[in-house]
Image (cartoon, rainbow, N blue to C red; front, top):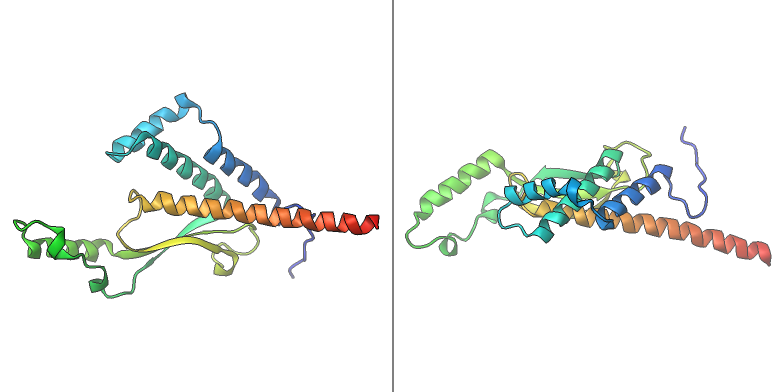
Length: 194
């Protein structure tokens, strides 16, 4: 039997979510200790040539904040294969390569890659309560998604953007829930005074 838990006004439905929100905000907005994160930021730039320092710091912050929220069970990634016909995703071969390129060979390589890695849809989701099963889709809110991704999304740039959008939605939902609870408390206090 499921018990109806009453919550205090201004409190999130799960008491641990507030602590996670604080840690996520600190990672996204707080001061980074230069000596401890510098090697990791250099590694990001080495793995992704052409990445600016600003982009590397953003990636570091988002990935670190994501790990905090994901390990606590408040955010996750859902991936599913695309069911659209493969032709839907096929590049425009006329404009993609120079005249010297063997377009048929390039198309065959692309098809081999798709056959091996697939075309995927990725969605980031969040929740404010750990009640219910993590597999129960009804307990999650979709923050953002992208389809038509060839193979793994990691390192595409989409990974950072989708995670950042999910964390933003997670923080906004928490703020909305806690401010609504605070407004209810204030309304009750007003009635008590009258």
